[in-house]
Amino acid sequence: MLTSSAEQIATHEGSGLWEGVVLHQLLDDCVAQVPKQMALADQPNRAQLVGSQPHRLTFEQLQWASQNLATLLLERGVGVDDRVIVQLPNIVELVVCYLAISQIGAIISPVPIQYGQHELTDLVASLEATAFISIDQFKDEDFGQSQAASLSENLLVLLFGDSLALNLQPPQPIHLKRLDEISEQVSDANRIITICWTSGTTGLPKGVPRSHNMWVTVARNCVEAGDYQIGDKLLNAFPLVNMASVGTFLYGWLMVRGSLVLHHPFEPAVFLSQIAEESVNFTIIPPPVLNQLAKNEALWNQFDFSALRSIGSGSAPLSPWMMEKFENEYGKTIINLYGSNEGINLFSKPCDVANPAERAVMFPRFGVEGLQWPSAASHTILTKLIDTQSGAEINQSGIAGELAVKGPTVFDGYWGTKNEQVFTDDGYFLTGDLVEICGEMQQFYRIVGRCKDIINRGGMKISPEEIDVLLEGFSGAVEAAVCAYPDETFGERVCACIVAEDTANPPALDEICNYLLAKGIAKNKLPERIEIMQSLPRNPLGKVQRFVLQERVSA
View (cartoon, rainbow, N blue to C red):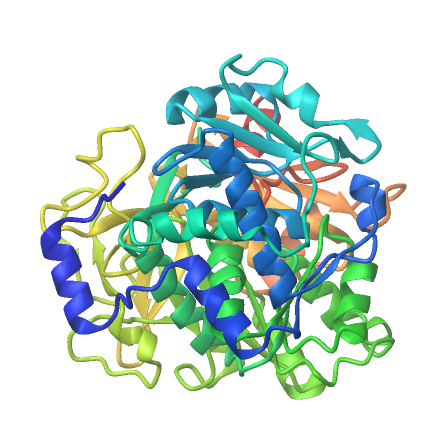
């Protein structure tokens, strides 16, 4: 299946930004170069997740496993352009599925392990899926059969630990011949390889088809952002179902013939131990964990992080004080990553934004005429701001508008829906992110929130993410976020949702307000209500689901 037009293909292939490489060809190159190198490793606590011991596969073994699974899928009737839903935690079998499905020209739709029967039923119907691959046991519960129970009877169900197992033996020659026979048919890098799903922070998830070429361009940028070196060890703790992991790790790891170490679910002690014990060179760490490490030097000093060159982070605003702490005291550079399944692919690293405090909140305006950047990624995307009311382009500082992006990293449209209002007339994707121009030379973007997240207090628009960042430094809170709640006078007011450090003595509203006033925040942005919660609702990427907060507070 192709979604890109002939004109797009000619333009991006002609510029060299679409390289014409498919996922399993990247693996073939690794096998040709370093067949015996450790390629892929499970987390040490895998047995607690799925009841089986961790795997450590060489590139050669990884290729055999993927070829054997590809053959099995062909024998069971899965073929070119068939949609295969895969629901697995971050274990080696998930990576094997990506590679096997690539080899037969099918389309993988990876879904978060948290999705239940309700979501799966909708996705199977929307995709007209052919197969469902999952795991028999997850956290000591019957998982796969339970998930598949309400799905279509015609759906092929394959469960690792039950009807499916990793086969690490060399494939039979007859099976390799069959794969060779279809290789030319599936080697077009413009073919769709994944349909991932939006994070759903503002509503129901939407399918995002992406081709190999789109992913390779994104991965090339991620390799540059993280300064990957040949043979690097990378640690992935993000669910392998979206931009943060597929572009940064799945494709990027193979490009540098490195070693990929997996982690799931997120457990800080296990994660930090993996960084040290595996001598990891690059990883992505969620902002709340970075904040905790910055506040707790004793915890940081417990581990040997000498191999770690840099750290990526994103999916939520970063704290300037934390960035400065890591760079000036811990000697580690943090790369601010800004991406989405649809194809936003921006990053802020020292060569473009030298000041760590600025790097926490500012991104280079890649792809804007007249601005030049050291990073080659600046040539892979065009960006501009659109006024949410008039649709006019914004070129001045301090005026919030919707970020629009275009280029070889950007998808062609959502699966099975009308896309007329998703793109501008000149082909820019409307991201839904509210951004403003900043910097002395108007050279940066600053994210101020989501278009639908903005709190409207009597006509005054307030960005909740701006307040979230300030509250991250409040010592009485483990987690904090704000949301709107309805008000008859002003329409909306601000509520602070707090997970207290001391549950027996939680902070009061005036403590929160005094803390924010000391930070210089405008009084009209102060919370006028506080709710103490046991935890904040987050999606599989760790983003706070503000619409869930608003529902709870409004109720």
